[in-house]
Image (tube, rainbow, N blue to C red; front, side, top):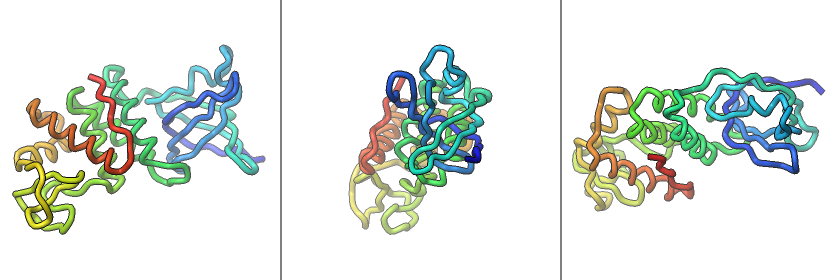
Length: 222
């Protein structure tokens, strides 16, 4: 059977039997897919040092006749971020693993973009920026200057049921124009800073969106 190849990002590894892994990837052309890495947990396995998250990988595998394929080779590229951001990078992988399911053609470019945003920013904002970008790419959040229910532009917006609402669409906790402008600026600039109070509110908004869509909340590392 012919072998297949793709560049990919590792999402998670699951121990299988005594020596193997079931490994979930986001491929540049394949999207979300799963492979069996036979013997990868053995001390002398060539996969042992290569199957690591937060690196861009080049994979070779054989497709399965009825089920998952079998990994045959892995080349590990450079790390996608500095090690100082590695805990937050793993959190982005955990969020992406929930947003992109097996067979979904998307995810690779979206997670790389989130990694880049994280790598460029301070630790206190990098994770929030990266997760917000993943949620935006997945269509779970809307623009910060419009009501997410009726799409009307408004300065007076409130947060309710994991959405921004104008006064006509419901009440909730007010989200100031200043906070919304700072979030928008953070998505595009590495020099913007956010107050501790606004960081706490933004984090709560993100956790709310994750819960509302049946996803596990972030584990805030620091």
